[in-house]
Length: 154
Image (tube, rainbow, N blue to C red; front, side, top):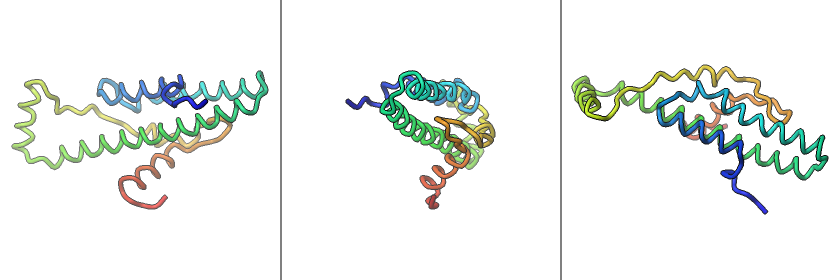
């Protein structure tokens, strides 16, 4: 029986952090420790599968869920970075009169304010350990961004 990734507790926690980041209340980089704490649940589950329960098939299931979850996480981070950068770039190209008009409208209920995002924390992560593998988040996110939005090969 195959369960959807949305029913996975670690993915549910990661998704919650990503959604609260999209709302603008908190920034994605400030939530990275929470995301990787949720991913630590996979390390614990894999360790239990191998050393306590001693069933390779359970470890294989955990490993495949980790692969899917981590790919979805890298996609989500890439999408978040691209959307934020696109929004900031479009604001910089607005004519001054349009910026003033948009600011007046935002005073009526909308928002032109974009909280500062510092993605250095994401791009400084070169050694992320997941199921005994060392992953470079900077390389993975950069490859996704280049492949999806710039059209560069992997």
